[in-house]
Image 1 (cartoon, helix red, strand yellow):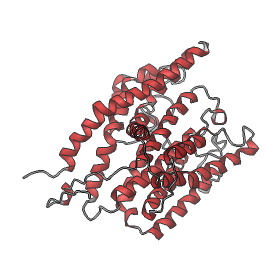
Image 2 (tube, one colour; image 1 turned 90 degrees about the vertical axis):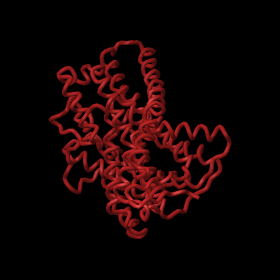
Image 3 (cartoon, rainbow, N blue to C red; image 1 turned 120 degrees about the horizontal axis):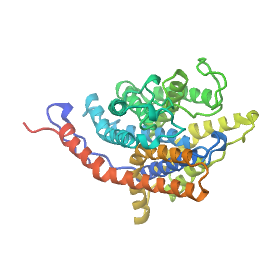
Length: 397
């Protein structure tokens, strides 16, 4: 049984962690590793249709399903013991130390990314970089006029933070409103969000937000800016997956399969590695939209249900899941500053032998894994433990 400490003030309640779904942790790690590879290959891509690990960007949508499920499992039955403020503190303790570390690494490595690909870097003074780091620590997105790299990212020191911003917003929605909904109401809401997903993947523009000649037609690629079209893409990518994951947790009907981790890993890898469906012919782009809709609406929830319903056995499999689960968030939130450097090196050395390009990419992948593990053990875990003792555990009077 889980032990819960109940002091007089509910805001000081510290809730012990529930047992983890090891398979889901492992799957998050599998997807995170593929994201790193996707971004390293992206340096040499001629565009979305030609990208190797072509649908690697869909890992973000899969992460949102996992996050919604985990939030429901971890917190749905705790609101009689926990205040909304305590929930927010717990989420900040879990997520924010690595948000700060990812931005810090991006700040330290910023000027190593100077190249023709990032024309604004050489024009940016050091104090502006520090200010952008401090702004990123607050998770406030940067306006376009504050761009210091040239990509109009909301977090120019560490691009992937845009998805963490959306995850924070989903947590706020959940704590203030969605947690109070019953299964039927939540299911109806998820159905409405599914319609938004279809409008995006099928290149519909019901609100007139997309500029003419949108390069990413029939796809969910995007969400990292604060222009109206980018915000629409980002929130559409967030809402159905996250709250579908929450609904799966509440329904509690999971699918059990033998060797669930390996089958689910295989499915995720197949989805993300799948070449562009329909090829490069614009007349066939709709096929890719259907593929993405099926993955987001059906395949990802199915994989989460299989991962939650299956059990893992064998010391080796357990160890692999544990390692992948531990490293999944750190590698996702810290790897992109290395990718900026790889892009810069490739832009400055276009005529370098292919072997050198391969060596740089492989080195960056290995470095990303090592850096993620080091920051996890030397920084994230100690800092979270320190914060738990001071923010989450009851204080003796």
